[in-house]
Image (cartoon, rainbow, N blue to C red):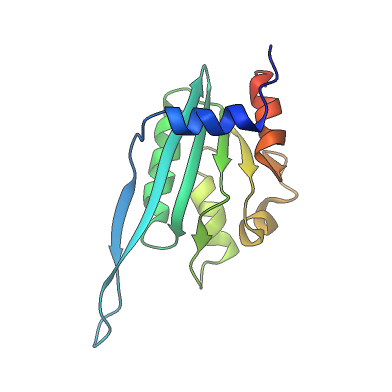
Length: 148
């Protein structure tokens, strides 16, 4: 199987059409203005039982249900390995370890590859054998391209 490397992964991201995102509204009552919190999940590559998803935006109370739902949908359809590009999202203040874990527990039997995840997410899963941490696109793409 060819070793395409990071450039190929980035080209796949450019070539594959945007398959959707989620918008959730959150805000505080009183005199503070309600804002919009957005999380976007783009499917960049699919293969039998695997999917590569780029996540951007905010992971927080207003969006965690949508992320969970999307992951659960894929798991129910037979996806057993998720490659999650987490270089862009950030967690809102107040997200606890349990909140973060709940987002990814939608697919308890799946292998999850976390790519470039921020420390607040990595700290929750460092010792969980279901999670493989990739510091870069290249390391994740090498595994993906081998079909593992």
